[in-house]
Image (cartoon, rainbow, N blue to C red; front, side, top):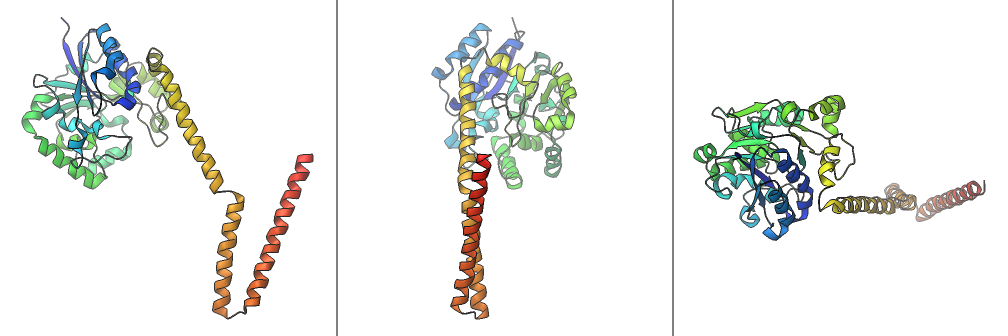
Length: 358
C-alpha cells in the first residue's frame, strides 16, 4: 500500500487548462505515493474536472474540490488585481475551515509550475518542531528578502512548501492569521500569503537548498543566476516554478524563452486543453497589437503638431495680453506660424513623393 500524500493547489474555471501540466506531472512523478489533490477554487464543479479525474484514475490518485467562498472573503483580504483572484488566497482558511480534519500534513504547490521528480522525501521531512518547510531564500529576489527584514519575518516560499496542519491549527486561530494579513496589507498594499505566513512562522520554518528542491525561471532569475546554473538545477530539483516579472513570462506566454519551458510543454502536448494554449497566446498578442495601434492613433505627428499649435497659441495670447500688445499683433504672429506649418507640410509631402519615385 502506497503512503498518502496530501497536496494543495488553487485554480478556477477560467485557468483550469493551464493547471493541467502541473496536475499531470504531479501524478506521473509521484507514483510512489497515493496522491490526494485538494483543489481549492471559488467556482469549480465536479463536471469541470472530468479530464483531471480520468488522469487521477490512471495513476491511482484522488481529486477533492475545496469550495472557497469569495463573498465571505471580501473585506477580510485584499487582492491586488483580477489576475490574482481571492481564491488564490484560500490558504488563509485552509487549515481551519477547508481541509477535512483527518489531514495532518499538506504540501502546497502552485499552478504555474511543473513537477520534475518525486516529492515523497520532501513531504516526509522531519519538521523538527517547525510549522513549515520550503526552499531557502537563495533564489528569492533581493527586494523580497529586504521586505521580509522590514516586516521582521522569515522568507517563506509558498510554491513548494510542506505544513504541519495539526500544529498550525493548535497554535494559531483563523483570526490571528487574518490579523497578520491586515498588517501586511497596511505595509504592502495587498494580501500576500508568503509575507503573512513568513511573519507568523518566524524562526519556525525549515529551509532546504533551493537548487535541489525548486528553482524559479524568469527573466530576473536568468539575469542574476545565469542560464548554466539554472539548467544544472533542472537536473536535480523537484519542481520548476515559472514565476513572472512584469513581462509575464510563462511557458504558455513565452515573451522570454526559458530552458524549463520544454518540460512544461512535454505535459501540455498531452493535455486536452492543448489547442487552448495557442488560442490564448494569439488572443493575448491580438490585444497587445490593438493596444499598439490605439497608441499610434493617439500619437500621430498631426495630433502632436495640433497640440503644439494649441499650446503655442495659448502662450502667445497670454504673453500679448500681459504685455499689452494690440490684437493685430496676435493675428500677424499666428498667421506667420500657420504659414510656416503649411510650408513644412508641403515640403514633407514633396520629399515623400520624391522618395517613392526613386
